Amino acid sequence: MTRISLLLLIGVTPLAFCTTVQAQPDSGYSFADTQGDHLDVQFNGKTLVRYQYAFDKSTPERLHETYKPFLHVMDALGVTPITKGPGGEFTHHRGWFLGWSKITTPNGQTVDRWHMKGGNIIHQKFISQKVNKDAATFSVELLWEGSSEAPILSEERTYTVHSAPSPAYLQVEMSTRIKALTGETKLDGDPEHAGFQFRPAGEVDRTQTTYLFPKAEADPKKDRDYAWVAEHFVLREKHYSVAFLNHPNNPKDAPFSAYRDYGRFGAFFRTTIPAEGTLNLKGSILVAEGSPLSAELIQKAANVFTGQSEPVPSVTERHADAPAPKPAKKDVPTAKPAAEPSK
Image 1 (spheres, one colour):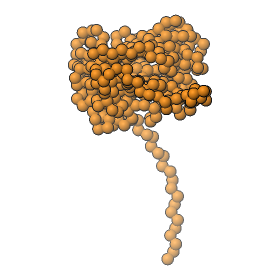
Image 2 (cartoon, helix red, strand yellow):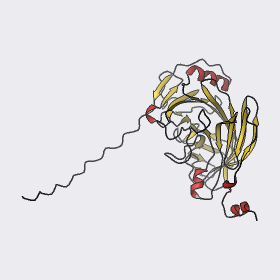
Image 3 (tube, helix red, strand yellow):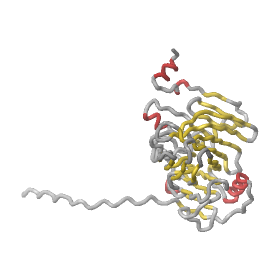
């Protein structure tokens, strides 16, 4: 029996034996796969994004770290993620990710594939990896577990990374096709706990987070179906702007969560997948370091993404909500000081 076979027999995944596989040369777009853990999309050898796909249940701690796949966005140097991974506040917030906190199946199951309670979203395989002079595209197959390990949803997710209009240094598109496996399945939750969401790294300076909306006098807690939303945040003393581009074919009446000072933002889609039916979603992100993204640039990119020719809208810029004040501590009577001894 080989050493790796022995590790598998006792329930330990052999991540220590992973090697990096370079799929293309360091000229133009390429892939670098650290097998069993993550896939990097690179341009001229510099990492642009990192797809984290490990699933390892050898220990509770390792399962917690790997219970769902997500996409890390790297800084402009290609060295450090500007997105959040496991741990920290709201450990389930990870990079650019997708989920719903209330998924209801025909047999009465209601499962949480946002906080990832009682189940996992598991990467099954890479379907394809393609590069050309303009872009890198890869597709993956995922299974979403129900309250038991039996899957309730299957997903085919595709990421496309391509050049972005300056001053953005990165544009990524995600399209996904989700199929109901057990009959009619309802995807629900709320804007804070479901949908396409982007989460910056935990070191964000929360006092400097702002959001830009494509509407005059915008109110993200009331408005629906924004064509795009952008945020500006400061991370490790560098300024970043990220715009999320919505697609008109996504489900309608979609609210956006775009007001948290720690920077998580995105669109929430409430919908039902019919028995044997599918749900198709599309989104795109633009990322800039330093110079902010203008409404003109974002709208131009949105028109290319959606195939429309919408004019540059009036906009509203809002500071992130300040955290709710902590309740004041009640006054606690203090003991009377002891009498000084007589002199």
